[in-house]
Length: 231
Image 1 (spheres, rainbow, N blue to C red):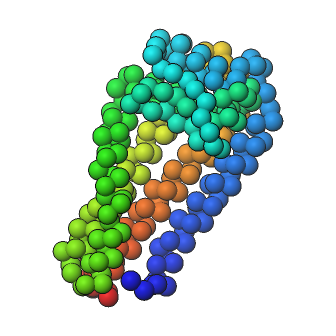
Image 2 (cartoon, rainbow, N blue to C red):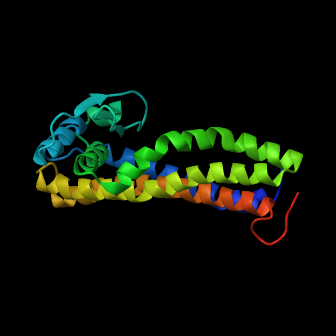
């Protein structure tokens, strides 16, 4: 496929939103990483305290590598925190750590959206891997069935990015409530820690918007959107 200048009209809004969200997340994390909580708890201690508050046992909290690589693995019930979060008593670290603990709470309570997203992981990986190849082959060979198959495979990734939004928002909401009720931070500190989570959530919004706009572009190129096929 040749470069299509029209693609810029679809991609540019999402690219700008993604750049803004990433810059905002890094800026807020850096700002509140310099402010220590009154409790003095590190990110790892805050996560353990939050889990204990809700009576959740069997979740391992460990340090991983990378910057803001924090995540919860439901398969091994492991909460992995980056070095800047694991051992830091900052409001930024506590916010991120409690957000990931929020995913553990979702898992323990059988939160439906989390279960749906986890079930989608294998098929989404398959779709993401093959969709671009199938689409490119379909457009080059001018085979509508291949194009439609590629669009269908790519749609799996779009659905995954959309389903991720309520999962991430709910994890942050659980973190905001539990941070205060567990005595990890004060109400005022929770407001500052929450600003990091809001910025981070915006990156997921940007990802979903990017996937959706790219899907619309493929539909337009295939003639499935706009009423006329474009080669």
